[in-house]
Image (tube, rainbow, N blue to C red; front, side):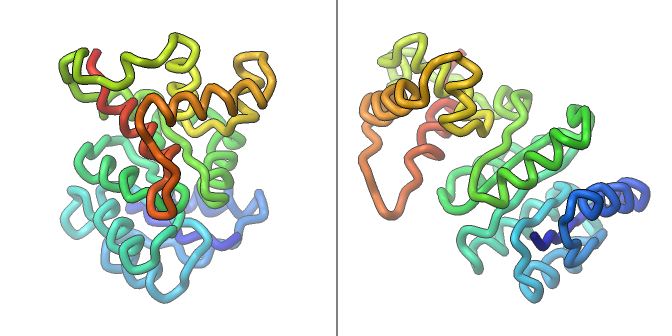
Length: 217
């Protein structure tokens, strides 16, 4: 599995390279600036990109912007954001395009190598890997009566919350100690109650997660 890695801090970048290589990933490129990231994503066509949000030269949201531009040119490119910051606007855009794997982890909440490696593999396979704190920060307030999530049962909300963390139906079933068939039924009910019809253009799982992110507290 070929990875393009973007991180401006040398020690962290070198550590991530060594970690990924130790778990049989091929590092196609390890870069430190936005322009280098853009070139690497365009020329090397990796299986997954692992990017920091704030890269030189601007040290603002360079990494996320490069990743989003790369996904516009190559729809479905899996992107895992690894950052100390949650950039809400671009993070929501990354989640909203509905194609390819996406993830957003906070550096100081990645507690072991297995957790990080699992997230990279999950995103590369087309799944999601979301830190719960990122989800919390992306929540927006709306009036409860305007929320279709109010139609969901407590169990369906629990399933949707785990879905927002990037868990598969099998993983959710294991967490809740129920059958995968039961989770599939809950998921179908969630899609129906949120009026998410089957479409070739939209990923219903991602759209359901976005509805969860928008719910009022």
